[in-house]
Length: 332
Image 1 (cartoon, rainbow, N blue to C red):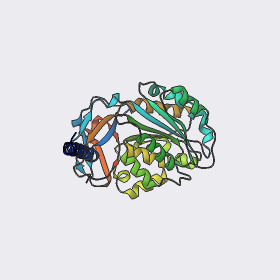
Image 2: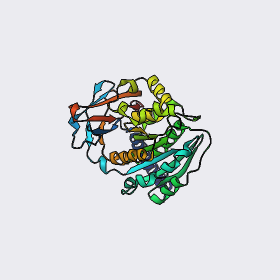
Image 3: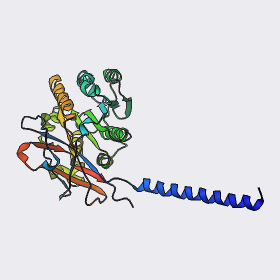
Image 4: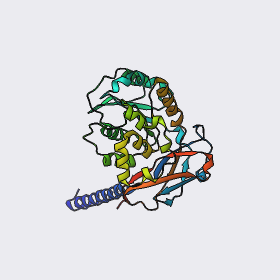
């Protein structure tokens, strides 16, 4: 090939390659910046007897973001989404006294583990955190892990364990329900990695519903938790939802209760085998009884947003829904 023709060919190939790279860069820019501002709001509606209410439509709900009513969408297929479940169990302090009940967790949540696509992991914690069983679809592995729990040290790093569990769930694929079942006492003892604000932010950024079962090794703590009465979380008012300062105070008083309230999950304490089994039955029954609402914020300013969810006809039931979310603001 003559030198001149070779040079022309080389320049033409270089032009084609440059164009392809430029197009690729543009495409990558579009992918990087095309982020969604959709906020997911799982909602459980209970009747006067505590049973789930079915058959509601999007127009039956009112969702307010910082006091501003939003346009709401109802995902009809949410119930069919597979579940990613983390079971975080305290083993430190006097948790060993609860092991006879905790070891029965696997059989009580068997209906969830038996559902197609369900993945479960077990996190054990005292003053440290251990991933005792990574996500698996095999119930026997979860069962064996829960039955072989060993007593830990004198700590109960609840905040660290919740943050660790949320990070695990955040890595799960899109299109899965993310659920954390926390079994612990009511107050944090020894968290040194995660601060309250870290947990508040993580809760707001991940679409995780937290269910908490609290045990109280001291009578004062038992009385403090209200003996399992979780009416505080129903129709949650501004005292738990609003300023970050109030959320911090709530977490210091009763960490599991404040966390479940923020996510729209459920909180209960137990003092007996029957009480534990009753609460676990509620957990399994309500997991797939939630409505999945979503909206695009009209004012997606960065920071903590207060949410309020209510029914247009309040007599139809009581609402249990997340009370806040964390926004990173519009993508620049």
